[in-house]
Length: 86
Image (cartoon, rainbow, N blue to C red; front, side, top):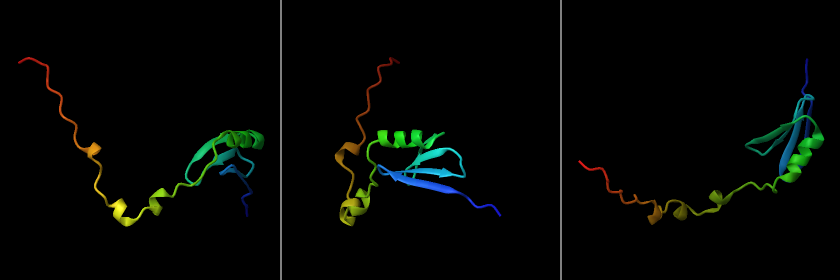
């Protein structure tokens, strides 16, 4: 029976992961940002990224605000007049 070998480090808000001595991956919870041949390269890449924080703004809004009508900016723009002569 084969068992998977997992090495995982959390750095600057990102996960640096290695599975079965394969490539090192820099990930967020939802995205894989890069794949590298060595742990040092992956850690340097994670260090160069801005600090990652999970966004939860949508969950914090009250239900009344979330159901509000869109702003006036979303209305249809006036149509351009055709310059073609008939």
